[in-house]
Image (cartoon, rainbow, N blue to C red; front, side, top):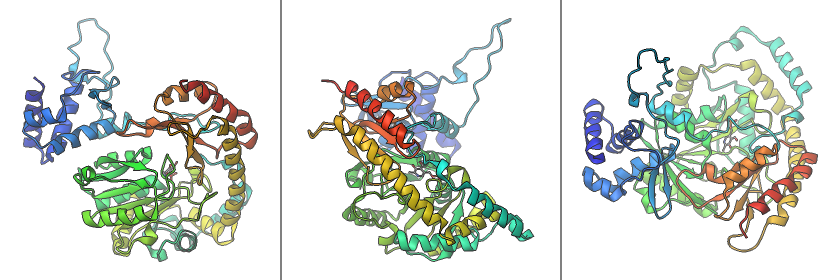
Length: 495
Ligand SMILES: Cc1ncc(COP(=O)(O)O)c(C=O)c1O
């Protein structure tokens, strides 16, 4: 019987390790699936029944089930319960001994729990970069010759100390240039010594997770979510708790408060992927909620350089009176992703701890490249690249919006656009009856990469749509391919 198996597994795990109860149940359920005790497509007992059978609180059971849903083991179907997903791999343990003469079977790699969650959750890595791939800038516009000249100059001027690891959070003139930019354009309140130069958002997130939370602590993430952040949190052993996003951004309920967070990860100026702009009231509420829980807020300001309409927005960090917001940004969207440079702004009280941990864990370096980037910003090249890029993307965005206009409607369930005010993508929201994953597959066969909105959802079942990027494709391509997307959408909407 399932509950007996789960109890035995939990007792075994509890005896081995001081895991919290929801983690023990999570492990026991996962093992039940891998060992075939719970088969693909099988329905799980309700959380109430499981709580009763296992003598656990319902919150504990819900926390374990949520985590397994987030990691793709389980799927909820509205009104009919929670089921084991079809793609859960069978463990090598379930396989019997090899018969004489039988060819050896290659053992599937025995991944850790964490490795499995990382390898089997949604990833953009496999998707081709082609017209409409979200989140990708047009790096063909990057001023390569100028950049080469600056790099050469700084390599010529390099002295031996510049070849060492860096212990101070990054090259000082670059930290100053970033601080000046953020103070003026994003209303971030900071001194240059609060800036830690990282290899981009993933490293910034991992530093926050490792230094501010312990294994098994809860991190609230927006639902739908940026998959890259999810992966960073899974990799650092945190329990991901999805919190639904509405038109004003993350919207925690009392049920969410029952899973007190240590970290709250948000994209307030352009929620990824639906594009909601967090309202001022919601920003204040979120800061108050963080204060109540004693949580840190991670603000990922990944594409605020490109704001096309609506009032200019300042950062959440700029409203924070308590120093509990960590602000992060990246150069991937304005320069190019392979540059691998981003930044994290930490509250003053955390500077030393972050610098030291960054040194110990990551051994940061690349001083000559950081020096070239500092000069690129100081000499105004960053500002002029940005000006040109904004113009280019504004035209592409306009062209895509025009192509999609014919499929939009006014009714409550009609297709509509969200999040087009900023960034390099928009979200075409579709009626619940549309199979957005099938629609995205159909478009992929025509050489267009859009992402289905439902693939970004962790727990919720009520969102359908297409996340469409306009950064990468040239204007002519958008003119040619925009109507192809519109036609496929029209076809996919049931009459
Ligand atoms: C929400 C969000 N944060 C960060 C990034 C990327 O940052 P980086 O290239 O520094 O990892 C992306 C990329 O699309 C993103 O969507």
